[in-house]
Length: 188
Image (spheres, rainbow, N blue to C red):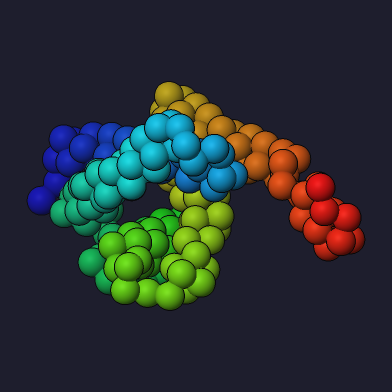
């Protein structure tokens, strides 16, 4: 079955997923800096992070499902989960498959978080630092120059995520001085 509507639904599902992924990554990074726990802001941000992450699965499944149903391009069901098996744009669809696999691992382990060791959950959650740029490259390479809005949204999402990671890495740790004093046994 092939229809222009399937193409539009697939592309819009991908764009909405990219915007939600960006929001989830930014919220995750911002809440990881351990702000003051006595305020409601961090709890609200964490709840929004979780809700949007789960909600984005609907748009991702819509994106992948409509791409697979649309027979205009030959993307098989296996190609959605096994990277580099598609006969259509093997590399770029393969990157989308990798991003999907990492996304699924993060979602499943987050749903099982209370049954998993914290270190395992955190290790899998670090996959988002690989998943996000892979998803951005997939989006940039699958869009065409005749779709400047899709390219701009994807590039903008990538820029926001890079900027947030840079902020996180360059942000001074407020507890670092205290830890250094404790290690030096110069307690205040």
